[in-house]
Length: 303
Image (cartoon, rainbow, N blue to C red; front, top):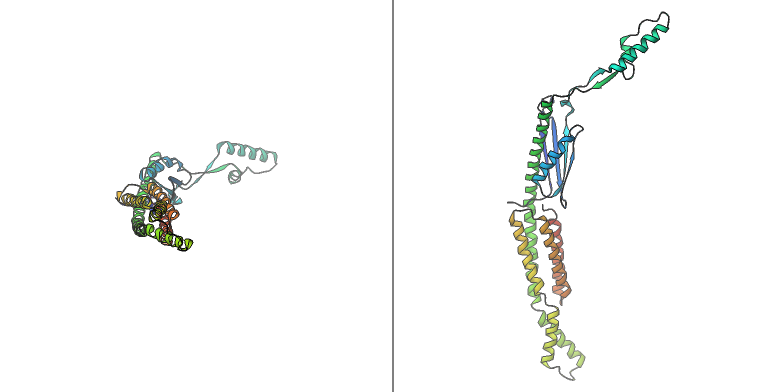
């Protein structure tokens, strides 16, 4: 299985079952996914379709583990039945009674005209006919099916991004492994460097007046070497590199564990720099920190 990124985009166009949309594009789904600590699905649905949200959210949760996913549904207005004017029975009766009463009080006043009564506020109201239940169910099913297709496309997009990400992460792990090997080679020379520096310092201090016993010099060198021994840190770095490569090859969602490993990488690099007794090892520890930070940034994109 491939590595999955949390970044992706998908777009799905669908036709509603009633076919009233003249261009055949009754609705459009647009899905965007970015990094997130967990899974956060945000749905933007047109009014009247809120009842679909639980089912759509369940479908997204079943497919993805992490990422902030924003899903927007746009429905063409052409698919809705045209509104129609309907008289309000109570308001109409009141308007007629009022108009006739006023006309009766005015001598010679002609009877009220129908269009004048209908023009009175509240007499007419605009209504959108209720679609048959079967038609609504078919519409909702089409929208849900379009969402499922969009989720599948988003998964493909995230997989494609994951393939690129796997290459970047692999190259960074190679860089860290190379720096770790260089650090091991430099660290192996530290005891000899300690002895040379200590011997030079003693010679300058004593000005040749008396000689320090070799046993005492060896003991001091051993103490310094013990304090600057970084073999344990290098071994742990090597183990972390092996573990990270196994996660990349495992095919399971590895983002959280990979982020945890980068923290462990950073701890070992910090300790390596703190124990360094040479400029060469200090420089390598700084290079390691920079490479590990780049690894951390890229690992944050992994599902």
